[in-house]
Length: 442
Image 1: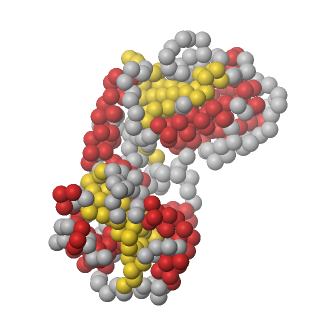
Image 2: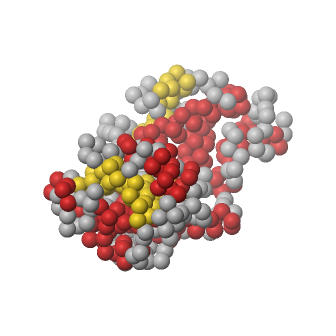
Image 3: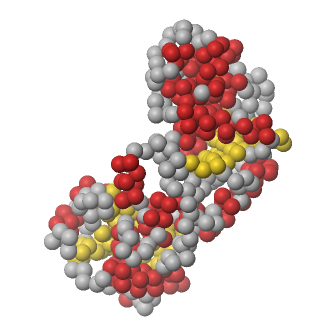
């Protein structure tokens, strides 16, 4: 069979693979991706896979790669890279580390699903291992019958920074997106991530082995400053993965800071920002709350829902979400969240829709207070939200995109729906001078 049988995406195979074809898949692993159903992988993804898995072994150092969001780096490096590595290193212990265990386990589950494909089984048979069979496939762990060494670690194991890594040792560690929007939001999160990076780089990897660091930057002082190697970078302008139309949409719907960081891989300074690191905490569901909805109807605006209630020592617990598109598509979800958080009054301005949204939410059982907005948006944000910022304790489950809109707020820049909603709720129901529940405006 000629190599053309594996030169096109999603080729259907039932015959054996030749030694020549196996060498081609190892040399150009994006073709392996095609066989696995990952049609969108390109030759550049083969470069990334080989850099993160092969090259550092030759030069005895870690590898670090930054690539823009939406570049399929996880699919290529984590998933296809793992399968390719097992084709020639059946006894290696591989760790997939991501921000959370669930994120890492999702990658391992994808590897497991692909390994069950008939075409992939034939590939491993051609590598001399027989038909691969998972003898352990649970809880983010995969061990196959071709692994001859006996170790506590599996062939592939998922780990999150939200769990413990102590006591584990690996031949290969792929750290993918362990620095996220949470690191942009919280100083404490950044410091915790840095500590985990130091642990991964020194105590978890076996001597002489290497770690691959993959992701995008989020803050000028995030974990990338701790990673012991300068990353190679592939910005949105270096790749042809997103079309010009897709790039333009990203610019319209992403804050300028986030676009620069995640797509151009350029972390700009935020010294001019009104709002620095957010205080984070956990929501007290026993307390009644008030809420504000900034509704959107068309264009690239988002709906923003903010919930707040007073807690001890003059603090205010806060939580928020942003929803893309028309508010009509989210009314049921908004009502559910309000009831879950014991919202007594939902504030909603009538300027955009003459009361349509308020009427719809009233029918869903919410108590809605409407008002006509007269204040300049920037003045509202720069006074009411700015004055309250030091008193706000944001729930750890707040939508990160919501908080990013606040942290990246600049006058005249969009999207600004989250800071607008938060400022409106502080002004309407939780003025800074009010320090007791009895002084709430409802």
